[in-house]
Image (cartoon, rainbow, N blue to C red; front, side):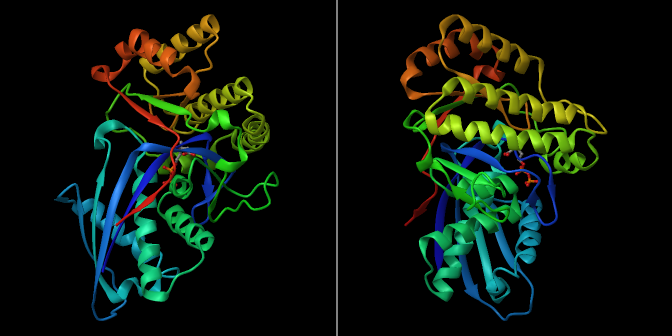
Length: 343
Ligand code: DP6
């Protein structure tokens, strides 16, 4: 028996930074689901004696990766409370990314969500179909246990993850779809990723989250994340691009300010990250084109803009920004329709 899912990466607008317990977020976050940056994962399984152990073969882009394999084994052993049948089968997983591994794109969101979707399809084929809503909630929950941000990748266009009184359906355990609650200007929104550096990050996100527990600004941050989410949801509904941009840029810089104020402190932005931010802001001031930036936990700049300004945006990127990217490279992406089951 075999199943294959293709699942995208996502970019957070309100950032998840700080967690507790079993992968539960300290604040609610919301993201755009991307289209072009995705992981495709296949899972097949064969009977074995249920000895309570995970048996796994794993390949990434045609190569056995013992480190990855061990990580996934540990993850699978940790979710047998959700999927108890996993120890009764020999599992074979193979996976590839649509983007280069060294591109500095958050690959845990796409890879863990693709794997979670495969596991949920396996569950359905062994135990019978469940409603579509329950299927995606379960996939989001299982993805979250692998990587928090992966919980948001299973939905089309936008997803909201984390309890908040701003949406009574929101949960810490799984994300919920948010795309149909936003103004049409955000449909097909662009996200071009300027590759400032492709080197591996010096501090992983998981380590960064842990440092929030002792960060002197953490409580203030969680309050501000809530206020920013409240204002952003209104801007998303009304199509208010100016407020959208102000909040999203503040979230990106605040994420990096939290890294700088952790103990030990660290900096993931590069000189060119700042140069690009300044050039973008100066051009926006002059041209009035609504193009904004965000960052994830790394130096690469995500440029967010509506489809209606695509031509001006591309010209500006080519003319003024690519010179500050490693080997002049950037990736063009946009808000996408979420995962697909590949038959
Ligand atoms: C800055 O989801 O990568 O991208 O749960 O430890 O796997 P783990 O962390 P991860 O953290 C993502 C942090 C972020 C912001 C975000 O995506 O919300």
